Length: 86
Image (cartoon, rainbow, N blue to C red; front, side, top):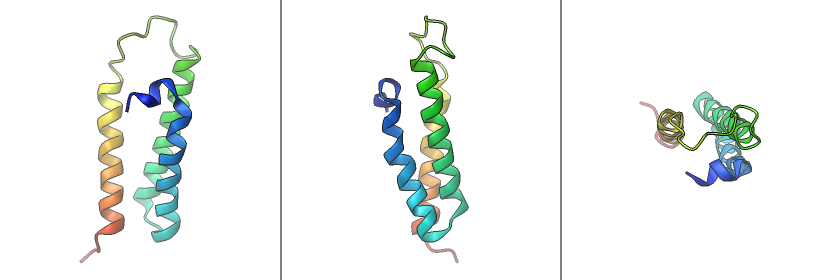
């Protein structure tokens, strides 16, 4: 997922995939995942352009929280979309 740090626009296909899942099944969790991926892309863009970072951002502790959170919400959205409810 380090590609998203140097190329924040690369989150667009991921967000579009979750938006497509939402359009297909109308699962709110898929819409939430799409929105969070877009928000993460905007956040990384602001970090890359040094708006949120003054210049010394070599150690990105925030990614220790952000990456697992995106993985969990994405996995939950996939499971909720593709596994039927009982």
